[in-house]
Amino acid sequence: YANATIPSYRLFITAAHADKPSKKEVKESPTNAADATYPTKEQLAQLVERHQVLGVSMPVRSEFIRDSPLKSDDLEAIDIKVYHRKPVTISDHIAFRTVKFLRFFADAFFRKRYVHRAIVLETVAGVPGMVAGMFCHMRSLRRMQNDSGWIEKLLHEAENERMHLMIWMNVTNPTYFERILVTLVQGVFFNIYSFFYLFFPRTAHRMVGYLEEEAIVSYNSFAEQIRNGNIKNDAAPQIAISYYNLDKNARLLDVVYAVRADEAAHRDTNHHFADRIDAHNENLSEKFK
Amino acid sequence: YANATIPSYRLFITAAHADKPSKKEVKESPTNAADATYPTKEQLAQLVERHQVLGVSMPVRSEFIRDSPLKSDDLEAIDIKVYHRKPVTISDHIAFRTVKFLRFFADAFFRKRYVHRAIVLETVAGVPGMVAGMFCHMRSLRRMQNDSGWIEKLLHEAENERMHLMIWMNVTNPTYFERILVTLVQGVFFNIYSFFYLFFPRTAHRMVGYLEEEAIVSYNSFAEQIRNGNIKNDAAPQIAISYYNLDKNARLLDVVYAVRADEAAHRDTNHHFADRIDAHNENLSEKFK
Ligand SMILES: [Fe+2]
Ligand SMILES: [Fe+2]
Ligand SMILES: [Fe+2]
Ligand SMILES: [Fe+2]
Image (cartoon, rainbow over all chains, first blue to last red; front, side, top):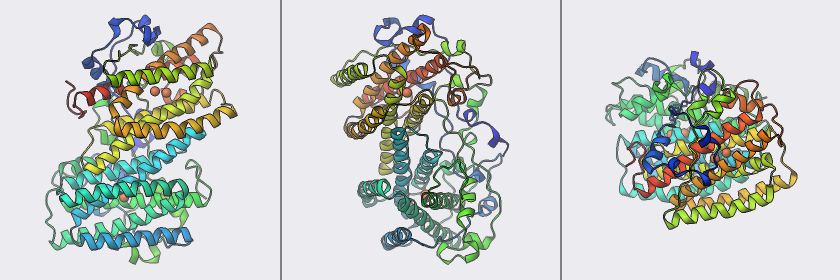
């Protein structure tokens, strides 16, 4: 991981911004600007294109970042450290019971339709990271204090879950009913989770930790169905191959292992964030004690 | 810009995840996991640390990404293409008038206290990108469609504005009254902007375009006050030096030029986004016509 020592401001590259300005142009204030400097919509589009954002849609786990593509063996070897965090406090129990309660409905609704289950649940999984990242961002602005790394982790998680959704969308299409369901569930879940995060961020992170534990269980069953031959082990969609740096002949089972590894990383992060709040030790640049 | 050709999945590096798992550990479902795999809080913290997010807090403009630090000449040479986009439609006029109306209060309140002005207004500037990015993310989840690059640009803008705030916080301290003002203004602005973005995204982006035009005017006046000697040209804060890759002897004036260049990039992006919505040509991976 030689690259890990590159200072972070070297990693995020924007496209070249070519011409030099005349001094006059730089000094003038916009409302007095000469008509000559007024760009057409097409010129403006070109200006914007020069500031392309690269460096996003990166995998969360370091295992996917290496020179050679990952083979099935590499994916099975990723250490997802399966564990269950036993609930201790009342907040833990509320989080755990809520997740188990929700799982009951998901199991009843989807049964063995694992790809459909993945699609619908990933549309939900993309919400908590974005909501939490947004609140941390707003708090940083409001208190005028830096946030010590929460925002970037949370938004990265949200983006990662959205990528899971895009991947499963390339495997099957949701039914019309599922599309409506997703819209309704987002409307409810976004608001409930926002309320929760504002007032009980500790419980909110613990809940996501437990949701991710359950996500691992579901992806384990999904994998088992593929290994049993009940679900066809089709070719992996191209988006998954490029996102996870997979071998070009990768199959669906490889994708399931890759996604499951991400869920394990989210589980760790969210349980840890709850622990951090517990311990009043929220600055990620300080060692957790 | 040799780096610009590196595939994006090479740019975002997470720390190494060391050990290999036993097969047993991988296959087991969490609720049956053996006690041996149950991590302590400290072990969990270590797990999470291995997935550090690098590659964020990157500058928006490519000019800051190069091997040698930027000197004052380099900063003055950045082409910010000063222009004023004349309002055309009613939506444009509403956006423009709203911004001019808000500017009136800002001018009356801050007069020549440019650093304080920057602090207070950057806490506001960090809101639109985050709100818009969040809505685009939620829409992508809800419609189960990829978003063609809006989310990353918008969140990058929000992060960039937050960095501006962190930089000015290292130059001076806001007054107690300003701190209260910031909290109140965020409460109002966040809600109004969210409402606006949901129903009139085109006008919302146009408004930000005009806000950024005005930000350039303000930073021009700020720069002029430094050049006149009315504001002391102190040493640049360390956070600005590392964020913008500035010379280690950089001064406050250099920082003003760097921040102003960012505002120009936001102005271009937001006017362009409004143009894109206008033209029903919202897919950023398609050429703007
Ligand atoms: Fe997921
Ligand atoms: Fe997840
Ligand atoms: Fe700014
Ligand atoms: Fe800005």
